[in-house]
Image (cartoon, rainbow over all chains, first blue to last red):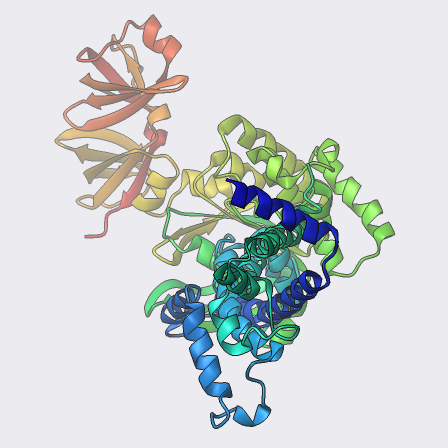
Length: 232
Length: 363
């Protein structure tokens, strides 16, 4: 019990004293996963919308593939991104391996199918006749897309939260393509693994608490956005 | 009816779903300020006709013209959609306030806030929902939702209003009130309307013309009374409530009155026919009287029979009768009690010759 109590106390001390290293790691986590989430929203929502709103042969198969992608193991993504960015791999000339950029790439690959799959589901859950109703109200194509996304805003925000949650907590890919380099590519999850391995439980606790707080604050903000403007 | 009155015309409309034809309409027209009701059973193609005419469903072949202009380009269809509006069976409201829902069509058209403040409350009031303006559309009753949907459709002051079974999901009292209010609004605004519905006689009251559909085709069109009183075939006869349909053969014909043999019994009817012609005799249950004594005069067809079944129909009772041929009669609960009627009882059924609608049978 002492071990846990002491660890927690030291952890709070590290957080309250704004430990420089802890802050740096937190900031990088937020930057990498935030950027990856943003990119995955742009790709996932727009492609998800196109898929949900159009009919083409093989649509069901494509949706099944995307839904499978929602459960993509981060280590598999890490492996492929590593191979692609390897010095004599296809994109080796970009010199991105073991950098925050490589981590963003890997996290985009993880988050995009999540955002896309849930976006498709969000739009498909709307009444099928709603599109005709919107067209009959005289909407242009873009006005229709806008009105439909506004109708699906609650599940859309859930898609965003799921995407962010997937990458902020992910470790396999980050450690493989980022390398957990101190002060450069070390994020909350990779640092927690390392500190736990070394027996530095206080540091590991501090990082874990920050990770939880971070996820909570971000999701709280998303939730506010999601529930905004819902009349009584 | 001259050409200039037509708001919407269609020629040779054909719609196929997965290779099977679901709609085949050689020609259709909707005149200015006209309220037309399309009736027919499920799967008769009435909703398909409505969606096609509203340019929300692309026909397999054929053309639709709005005030003489053929709607054959994307641009023409878009401009047409800005002039119409539509209400579906499901109110399909947006997840926002009633006010914002009603304002949706105006916002899409880029009207200013001040213009909205002028128009939206007027239409909220027209449908008696002004007190709900700030309420979430998710918290409305079925009737309130459909009122909001109708206000949203009418606030843009459409050239044509399309209604797809707008009352079907409502309970009877709500439906009556809404039909009453819609009739008033349509009269006030003079909106050209095309409505699709199951057979709802109240809805028929709204319209100047009825179009009956079956199997993807229009089988009869005419004023409500023409369709109700002179259905062209057994299908339409049953649809408009002539439940008893009997096979018979003409025995005598003179000066518009007929004697028809039905199951060996003689029935007098009005109509045209030649002796030996096979006919169907259609009779409304409400036109068949039941009595315990044979009191009717000579101008009525009277048959001795027996009550085989009694069904409750709200304020009425429906009696299945066996008079050597089956008949269905509708009596009030009051009359049923006064006459002391009961199942298995022997009775006399009677109806006037004018109550028999005679149709030639196609063999």
